[in-house]
Length: 166
Length: 161
Image (cartoon, rainbow over all chains, first blue to last red; front, top):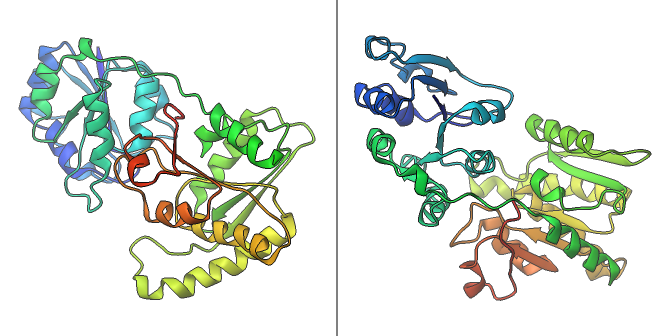
């Protein structure tokens, strides 16, 4: 089984650091996640993989800075760990994969954590800090997560229709 | 915006003008993808590249100058293409577009309806663009219910994206 980690279009040093720890590797192994795919953006230098611990624990690692689209990796993953950006969260939710959204406290504009928390409260994803990630992987109740409703943007079309008919 | 446009009938709105930041290559790709996905026969879309009204991190003291420059380019495009309706969803240029669309109304030339959709990421507070557009938009859509308390004109519509 595989896990896909994505930091988004810039970087997320703390997240990349967190997935490079032995604690995280053990958590993956504990859940049978033996394949780790990482999109690290600008945070490549914090990636301590492949390391002795990942090889020793039998976890294969594929890592790259960017990909044209993350959809294919999400679709193939059994667990998605993403930065808490709205677009990434929505992509993961619509791919119907269990999702851990990791909040970046270092971002000046921390309203990003609002959607992660709301969606966490609504049981659509698990919210975690980078430090708490290993615990979230090991203990997260992914089976309790609720599927995310399909997007229906037709009301926008209707509103535009209404406004142009007036 | 790409997600929202799936709800818009392109055969009805057969000409689409996208106003994009001049340095924003990603959005141009996004527009291309949006248009390619829809079977568009004999329909038209245009991409208007305009300088940003304010770059990320740019000091607010210099913003009026760059905003004016942006306004000039936006106004020119709007004058040439004369849209029947404007749909915007957030970033800085959207306020300039909103103002440019509002002016013909004040001057009595044309009433161009403005539909604003606040970002899905805004749960408890409006963005700066949102606060300004709340005053200009004919329809103001929010994606979280908490915003309707403080902004009674806001229409809460879930699951748009």
